[in-house]
Image (tube, rainbow, N blue to C red; front, side, top):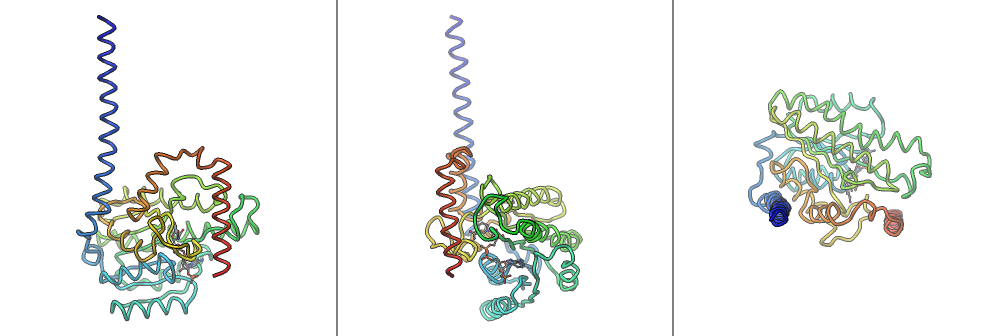
Length: 317
Ligand SMILES: NC(=O)c1ccc[n+]([C@@H]2O[C@H](COP(=O)([O-])OP(=O)(O)OC[C@H]3O[C@@H](n4cnc5c(N)ncnc54)[C@H](OP(=O)(O)O)[C@@H]3O)[C@@H](O)[C@H]2O)c1
């Protein structure tokens, strides 16, 4: 009698646990459909919701350039920031021709440390900026290798911290006060899936991207009641110079497709991988591939091989 009662309780508990797990997956699926399918049809009107100007860092190439062009297509004027004036001017001309939006360029090297920001502040002083895209980022110094083996390690540490971390914090510090005053604003921080899990042989990159993600999420909760949206975007592979212009397929997006899909998710989620394909890949990495598996010597070897192949391709380009 007692045994059968115990059996029934265990049975019930098992059913409850199973229902919880199934409902959790169904919920994740519904959220995915909302963020990546519905958002294609019901887009947030970025200009109306946040204001007339957007600032994009690292805007002369890759994902930043694609964000800048897509924002202009959606009716915003754009400030483009990066190092190379010729490349910046070319993107600005393309935007003015294709979208008939205004542009402004600022030449800046984000590895320069805290002293460079007064120049940015001055240049942005008179613009009604509603959107900031902190996109600029750098990866390996010269090859994927262990932390202590990175050539010129001290310089590398300073450069990557300044470029990937300080730039985001300082740009936010400059533009957030005006957004709070106007009770509207959008800050998009382009982190990486490398910030969601440890990446041996890209230690500094992975850690700076995790910082970006945590900064974004904490800031989102702090300022959402002030009308500010902060979004952490964590892409996997996008075909750009940084990824060795790797060929595109279902797994690897073009920067234009990526930026378009990622901008569609604004207003739907404050943290995501930017596009459906990357969300699915990240889901698989989260649920089916454990950290031990991912960092095992065999996968480590494959990952080193892939990274070195990419670096060779980058050098050839
Ligand atoms: N591509 C991917 O697969 C991938 C995946 C995950 C995350 N991400 C993230 O996405 C962001 C953009 O990457 P991407 O692939 O588009 O890179 P990219 O193609 O190498 O473009 C980088 C952009 O940043 C500018 N830039 C680089 N260093 C700079 C510096 N020190 N100061 C100012 N501007 C600088 C470059 O222009 P100039 O050379 O003219 O300065 C260029 O406009 C990065 O934060 C990256 O971590 C990329």
